[in-house]
Length: 280
Image 1 (tube, rainbow, N blue to C red):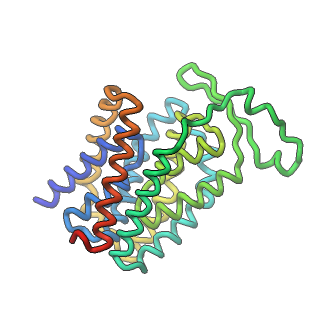
Image 2 (cartoon, rainbow, N blue to C red):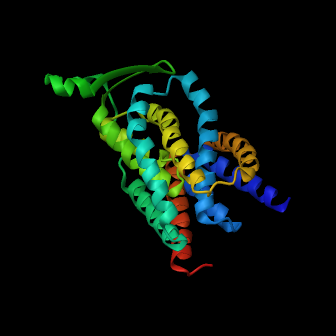
Image 3 (tube, rainbow, N blue to C red):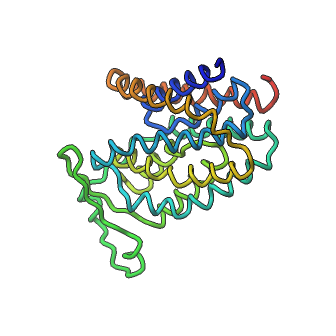
């Protein structure tokens, strides 16, 4: 009973922070699970299944808001479903402390990236039409997209090869560390393709499903997934996401960015301390 309550609270905290920062929450969930003595490989497997549940629940709202680009999500899924298997299989073979150390390095790197990242590029019709694609090969990998979100027009151009590359990166990281990949996927879509932020966030929820399913399957095959622990996590997560979404309306964007950076640095310090044996 004590473990179920702990898992519910962990799900609640993860859901609240995920709703607040607009990320899948794996980078929060995995360290919290290690706090209650769940081995990191089992924590990664649980995190991936947790992400599947929370992503599906969030997708309904985003589809209704027209903030999901299915074509872009599918282009990322093509590669991510395979690289997630690679990442998960690498995780199974790594020593636990090494995995914790790598997790800490990952979150520290992402924290630095977010801290220095400029504002997302806007995707106006003028920008997207400046250089028309005339080469027949390029024409097959570029797609002009247009969406109306909350009565605002968004025009942007997709490079499907970049989508494949983003999927490959995110899939490997997701399978290896149990993170949804949204905290990587969103800035990569906005920075490399000029995808509007609202559409990038919604698309990332669909985009993370393929690597999360693929990675969790690989870890379950390696006997690293205990589904009995999942229901308490999911109930807490779904409730926490509602709290986080409401808190989002009360906090300024600049404060939110600083808080997210601080959280990433806190997580990285904790996981680095675990990986080096400084904290047992």
